[in-house]
Image (cartoon, rainbow, N blue to C red; front, top):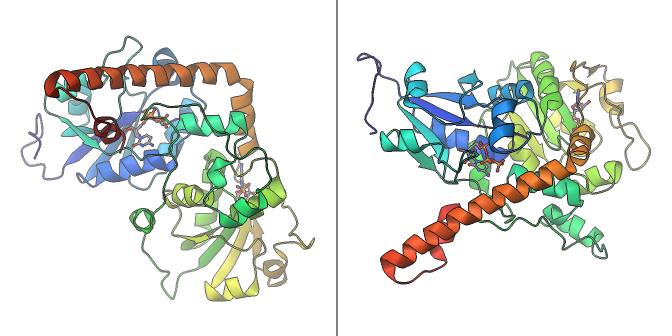
Amino acid sequence: MIPVKNCEQDRQEIRVWCDGCYDMVHFGHANSLRQAKALGDVLIVGVHTDEEISKHKGPPVFTQEERYKMVKAIKWVDQVVEGAPYVTTLDTLDKYNCDFCVHGDDITVTADGIDTYYMVKKAGRYREVPRTAGVSTTDLVGRMLLLTREHFKGDKEYSVALEHSSNLGTDSTARSPYTGCSQFLPTTQKIIQFSSGLSPKPTDKVVYVAGAFDLFHVGHLDFLEEAHKQGDFLIVGLHTDLEVNRYKGSNYPIMNLHERVLSVLACKYVHEVVIGAPYSVTSDLMDHFKVQVVCHGLTPTARDADGTDPYLVPKKRGCFKVLNSGNDMTTEDIVQRIIRHRLDYEDRNSRKEQKEMAVVKTLQNAHVKQNGDYNEKMATDAMS
Ligand code: CTP
Ligand code: C5P
């Protein structure tokens, strides 16, 4: 075990520290927090301010208040420390009684190119977990700016529908092994790791909501918090990429079904997810899951393909409820924010990639010096 410093003698639990920007929180962030929590008992997450991120990395997409809220809702997180310093110090770990700090195996440097974890590494209070390949804020921003559809590749039905689309084949320009756009490969193992594994008890009141939940954001979060309050067991139905594209058009959804499943499963209010739920809430679905309440937020509801109201059945049964999330953020708003700041983000992405490529080059040179030859494995090891 990592040497424990400045810990109370009688403290049995292992307290783990993570920190980061957590901008446009995605399932890659959630997966790193899941792995970090598994290394101890209590997980404390430090989130940087907008000012710190702008200084070291470039402008964040989400405000600090939004980012704090999103991280607090990830089910493996026990506490969020708002405004954590960009460079992790031993004082910070000690202040929150943390034994060690955990980070993904990518490189984080300050504006001056200094490793943000050099202090905790030197003190032996640093651990690494594998970064989730194929997802990053940089890649998501790329999908929004370039209107790519590569992320639908896994959806066979969609690929057929897009067979003649000239847009297929274009993609983000990132090439570094860290934020470069390798495709995320969903596995059953990942779903099991993210899932609560719970079934409703016979006495539980089951609540059902459905939607795209694309680019999972604070509006979704506030809505799910309200939906969770309506009963004891919350099931979220996620529509297929093809279905979402039918009623939203363009290159929506920005995240494919597998990615959306993991984003929603990481939320602490959600107990179960239906992967590829029918657009209309049917009697079969309600009976199968013993659904007692069906909810939708204040956002408009598109008609089903045949022109019918997707909530007709629960409305007839008298168990449909409209909830006010108190938050008017939408997926389109996020895309608009990105487009408005297009140049800033493009600049930020290219700077981030250049920094990463510089570190990869240094690693390669060091390896050549040590072993006389270089093979690709080293770079791929760094990103797996
Ligand atoms: N992380 C991860 N897998 C990803 C993306 C991020 O494990 N696909 C981890 C990072 O390694 C870090 C934590 O999530 O431990 C917080 O990352 P953050 O500071 O938000 O920045 P980035 O790594 O730059 O995330 P992104 O590239 O998505 O902006
Ligand atoms: O738009 P999407 O299908 O992702 O929305 C999923 C659910 O979240 C819907 O019921 C929608 O009304 C709700 N929502 C909300 N407040 C927001 C955004 C979405 O209540 N700001």
